[in-house]
Image (cartoon, rainbow, N blue to C red; front, side):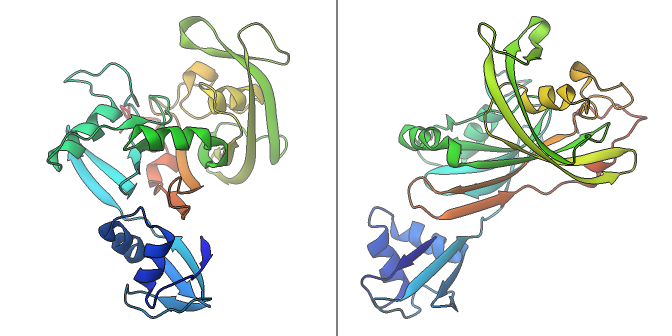
Length: 295
C-alpha cells in the first residue's frame, strides 16, 4: 500500500489520520508487522518522524500463531480485528455438520478463538476447501467484513500447488469447461453448457518434475466445486492421490493439492497482504507404502 502523508509529525500520527476508524492497538500492530519505508528510507517505530508530503510504502508482514485445538496444531498465518487466514489440514471439513469426534475447521477455530476472548466471537465463512485438500482459508470476524470480502472476491489472488501423475502437453495454459454435479458427489465436465452446469476457468503453469510426478502452480478465475481436481483430470493430468478423478491407487488418502498462497488488499484498510503456507517435504514425496490418513 502507498500513501502520501497529509498531517502529523510521526508515523503513528500519519496512520491515525489515514485510518481514523482503527484503534491505537491495531495501528501499533500494523507498524509492528509491516515493512514500511518513507521516501525510500525504512521506518520501524511509531515515533519515527514524518512530514506532510512524504511518500509512505507499507507491505504487511503477517504474524504467525499456533493454536492447539482438538489434538491439532493449527497455524494462523494472519489475524487482525477484521479477519483471519488459517492453514486447514487435509481431511477436515471446512464447514457443515460438526460433531465432538469430527469437528469442522470452522468449529475448531471458533472454539479456540473464544477460549482467548471474554465475549462471544463468531467466525463467518468466506470460502471453502474440499475436505481432502489442505491450505489457506479465510474467515471473517464480522458479517460486514464477510460481505466486503465476497463483494471483492475476484480481486483475491488464490494460488494452489498440485502434484500430478502426468506432465501437461503444454507447460502453461488455461482450461475452460462447464462443470456439473453428478452421482456419488462427483463433478463432471462438459465442453458446452448444459442445464445446471457452471462455467469454470483454471490457469496452470508447470513448475518442475519431482521424481516421477510433476509440480504445477494453479490459479482460479472461478471457484467451482472440485474445480482444480476436475480440470486436471480433463487434461489427462490427475492429481496424485485423487482416486475420484482418475489417479491410480499407489498413493493412499491424501490428495496432493494445496491452497498455497493468498494475495489481496485488506477490505477495510487497503493494506496489501501476501500469505503463503509452508510446504512440507512429504507433499512432494508421497508414500506408496502407507495410508497417510490425511496426516
